[in-house]
Image (cartoon, rainbow, N blue to C red; front, side, top):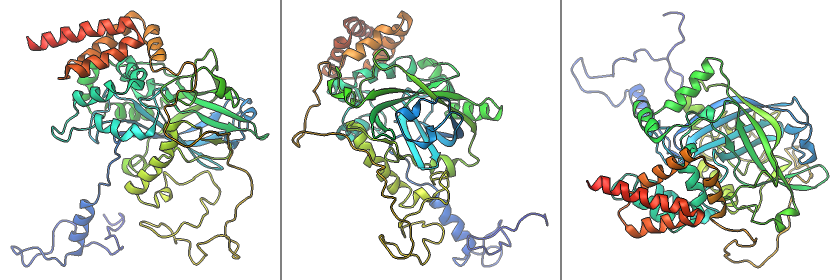
Length: 492
């Protein structure tokens, strides 16, 4: 025992006895003056920070990204892509969307696929999903959508009535619902799914040329999925199955990897493309914009402490570095505010000073005039000034044009974004259904019907089925029959 470090209170004083509270005699009451007891109980009461409103069930790992192509500087001046062989450390957080902490990580749900690259120019957060599209194209609808997916105010459980009622009024979600209720709605493991930046972003090269870009992480382990029955059984036995699978693979030295590929569109082509390329409910066909391999992401280390690294990790799609930036994607524009604001509420104004969120790749760390606030780590800037410009040799602007713009025109208003010949909510949803083989189509119909059969309002069912029928007439008719069969079977 003598070689062990001394247990201390939070102010560093040695603890003589960690087994018994101070009392008045052997049988007397506990004393309020027992600072060690009060401190332990007070800290215990405050161990849980507010959970994420969405993506609360998270799984994280560290790794690195290696550039494999010399073509990227044609499109962007990002230093991390400067030359083949260049490596950048990173942290990835996978997650489900709707479940609260403790929910099974095998649920049928999109998976968050967030990557924090610790580049030499600062942290670049690429915050996406394991689907290339999303339910919505405008962030103003996001709170309502999430409310329809979360626990009902009355029943305190997820309600199919709410989920499908919202969908029945939101045809733009048809494409994503086919993704979600298809085979890829439940990956067999985090290692066996693709990831996507999902949004359209902008790249600019050293000559000032702007390109629109989409990011695709293609799993090198191959795609594998679970059926609804398999997921229910596995999740019931082990709600942390996906986390366990990833951590055990890392412990065995089986380091999962993804090939990063990009689609690149020259700036001028967006305006004349056949549908809005900034619409998050649509994909860019590979025939128009082929995938270009640019690098490889490898995960090689599980965090030592879940709370410090996974729960406190904060990803912000507004965290860009020179050479990459936003686009007119309406959902992305909303997320540029919402994510950072969520972290400032949940973790505090100084959350970027936490080790997992700090710009580890920047020599000397972040240098700015942010001061004070809860949990101001370090010396809070010491005696240096907290304003700029100043005459005290503090951090100064470079004058370089890191931000890059793009042309905008029009009168301010609230517009339906129909500007292109194929701005349609059903074309790509139907195409996705038709590329499935017959077995996959059958599972999709069964999954959709199983959920819709639980809806009590017939008008909600009819509106929902109508969306799928507009995507593909066969899908609509098969779904109508399957719902009727399931409802009849339930009534029996």
